[in-house]
Image (cartoon, rainbow, N blue to C red; front, top):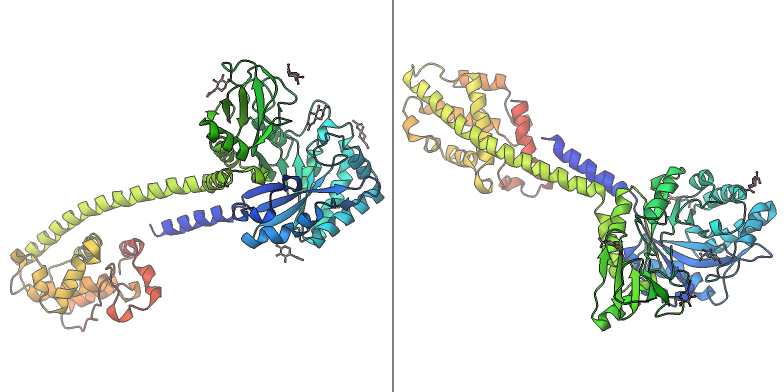
Length: 542
Ligand SMILES: *[C@@H]1O[C@H](CO)[C@@H](O)[C@H](O)[C@H]1NC(C)=O
Ligand SMILES: *[C@@H]1O[C@H](CO)[C@@H](O)[C@H](O)[C@H]1NC(C)=O
Ligand SMILES: *[C@@H]1O[C@H](CO)[C@@H](O)[C@H](O)[C@H]1NC(C)=O
Ligand SMILES: *[C@@H]1O[C@H](CO)[C@@H](O)[C@H](O)[C@H]1NC(C)=O
Ligand SMILES: *[C@@H]1O[C@H](CO)[C@@H](O)[C@H](O)[C@H]1NC(C)=O
């Protein structure tokens, strides 16, 4: 029993020691004020993006972004000093929003002196603005014509460089490590990056399909385009789950339905709705649904929510989908989740749900189960003790009756009887209400010299009185709070044999709610009031 608290502490410690990433992107173009970010809900906040100059191959900030990016790190830290700010690097040609190739990036990666310039300038920008790491955003590399083998030296050199500066290095990747043509160099990714932010969304947009679809489907029964498929592929290709961070989308896509009555996933549509490209933030979707009094429907086959407003169909992640995905990440042993993008949340609803679900780790669940089992065991032990108590009390009665009927001048109790009796005392006492159990009562009576009141009247007899009172004193010594002060069995036998030996005076027994009045202020004594110490006296009778 004494091991149980240690086991619980161990479990608590291991679950606390585990890192769990709650990351989120903030994109400069969102126009969402950085001071409004609720940093307390995140462990990492990623500022997107810094760009690579195609001719000098150096990292730079857009002029219009500069004021925000340069103050990002210090601003997010004001609400949560322990949040870690990272700077994300855009690797496609041009700026974010253009669907262009990454040819410039690949060209840089193939040339040693270009790489050097890129790496040195990147570290400089990060250091200058207080970022604690870099995020290489290469989510679209698979859709460009190129040779990813040539990325290996870049990744290796980046690792060496960030290590000298104590920076974190992460990657923003495609949902799957490969397509039918190309593959990320997974061995190099595993070696060089602290973890990978998997972009598990935007599988379909209303701009490029005319069928309603789950753009961030966790599962898809009919195709390979799903988060679960991608994550499994990454793991199969050699990236450990502990290096994978699941992407969560705080946006959806809106389609115009051909027939509002046909509104499932895969229903025919005729182009985008609501916005020019059909993408809609969670905040806007919530407002839209509220103003039309519509609720979202959760489909747990795909793990996606959707709503129909007139002829519009919107597919997005609501609270249920987010919760299920975070639970999935936990269950799969992933490192955490990463939100694209933080400003799209509605009153931090999704971020709170995600953070909350993340707390319920497998370890915690395991812990809850363990604690329930322990409680059950304790209750069971309580029942056993209750039984023992009845049994032992009746035995003590028998014993004393035995003593009464035999010669009063003889030793009436054996060692075993005494031990059993003292054990029964501590057990009986533990069961007493509010800590003022029978042993405490016995102690008070014994101290007042009227200990016999504690003994069943039928057992009272002028001849055995002294003996019983000494037994009581011995018993009280045996339940001393401090085990070192409890007598050994040898001492007990000596005390009982020699009636005139000066016995130590017992102090107030252990296992009572109140401490010694005179030692009330010693906090260190607290730990003694545990059930487990009582069991020690069973194992090591003294
Ligand atoms: C970019 O465009 C190509 C075709 O134009 C398309 O196949 C690809 O999926 C697009 N990539 C993204 C990320 O939208
Ligand atoms: C990629 O480049 C490496 C060496 O630079 C070469 O061995 C490999 O064949 C190339 N792969 C493709 C698909 O071009
Ligand atoms: C590097 O980071 C670790 C913890 O993140 C810290 O203990 C250490 O002091 C840092 N070293 C330098 C040189 O900044
Ligand atoms: C999810 O949507 C698909 C396609 O509309 C449908 O076949 C399936 O029954 C739905 N599942 C649930 C649990 O609603
Ligand atoms: C979807 O349908 C609309 C209307 O029929 C059409 O204009 C548009 O080009 C279609 N989009 C795609 C991606 O096929």
